[in-house]
Length: 385
Image (cartoon, rainbow, N blue to C red; front, side, top):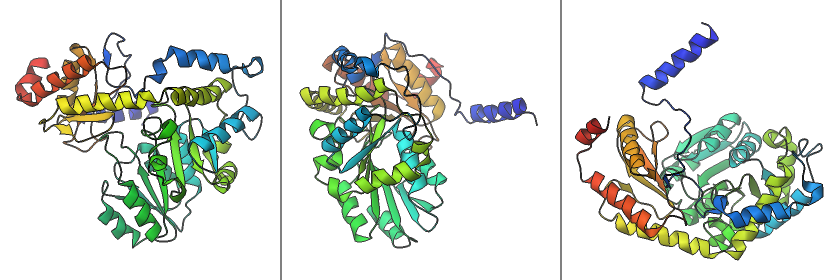
């Protein structure tokens, strides 16, 4: 079979399954209820100016010129890693180009063939992909189910690594962190916490859930992503100084990739500086979440969540696509989440709340959703298609 025929066959299978994806350019005229820019920092003119002002003439290179082990390292990036360690209350941090790369680096390099990786079934694709790259055994456990996790910890071979997220990106719910910390300690497992959707929105200075609950010294590895609430790009791994040295020596996604450019590095520092001066943004975001959840009371399709991420279940890929199109025509930029990204029958409209969403906009969206929840989807979808 030729390459073109092979690609065509697999694309057709994807289409027949109702899972075909395509890139779209968002309509700037729609009301943003889909981006991960929870605090509005990606849109902040003040932050943009601070980043540009923070770049010295010596730092205004178009690129970093190489990996950090060759020509891409600098005093600037090392100083910012020290600053991040202070924010995240860790001995050390190591900057990566993305949270995806950071998860690949950790899971592909630390657990070996004698070990076991246990990850929450709702964990991000980067966690699952990192586990696949590892030589270790890997098992998922039921979402936030401590009994299932403990049953599997009892069967672990070698060292155990438990991988969870602070806030899950599809349901918006939190992990039971206190119990996870205790259970991991009981079985001598290393807990790895992905703080992607908690960084910026939780904890002093956006330090995340672990710091807010004073567990930073009881969690072996934390991943903080900056491309969501911090409004920029990149990520870091927070942990011990020995962890940082290990990753520099053994993590292939760190060793063999070009370092972030200086603009991206300075942006990390300035973004956290900006949040430190505007901590009120967290309060404003929590107010928006409360307004939405209150307005949606009694709606059975709403997935319970206290975070910026809210889910409105519409079963079936074609159905949820139609409902998303319906809401977009009413100026709400929301997107459908299809199976197999989420479980079959649990397809949903994913709604992200932001500090820049007005109270009126939030209540209007809630009104539309509640009206949809009371209607029979079938004739409505037929009318829309």
